Length: 186
Image 1: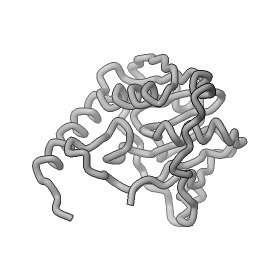
Image 2: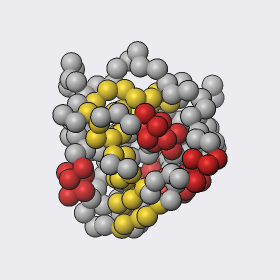
Image 3: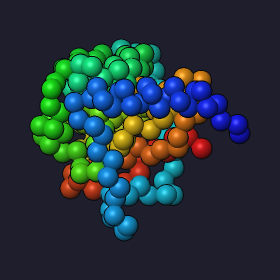
Image 4: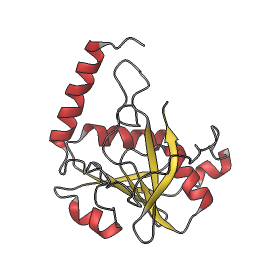
């Protein structure tokens, strides 16, 4: 597959601008080998069709998003959630650390914004279909994380519409450990 250098350069510029605008840059520290925080490679992807039926869609719970007012990628993720049918309330903050600590985002699993929905937290650019699956399955967990800001995730779309990076959304257990929830990409 040929890479469009102009599109990649534009994406790099957009990403650098978004990171500079965020109140707290993503915490992208890698998990140590053998850590319980690493995704499980054999986990399966969510079914292609996890959208809720039209009556249930109207009953989707409120998503409360904490973000920096100048972060464009966070705003695009908010629009992604609204387009998926979620009502969204946005709180612009200067310091995201207290929110991340309060909800229990594990070290090394942070991103640029934190959302709360129906007793769960959603950290980063998690696709709406994964949030809907979480709400349908209701596991005994704290929430979902998508560490960093993977290219191609909701809010981090590539300018040329390319497929972006392969990434894992992880489920955060009550004890703070993570397991793979859904794989996206190739």
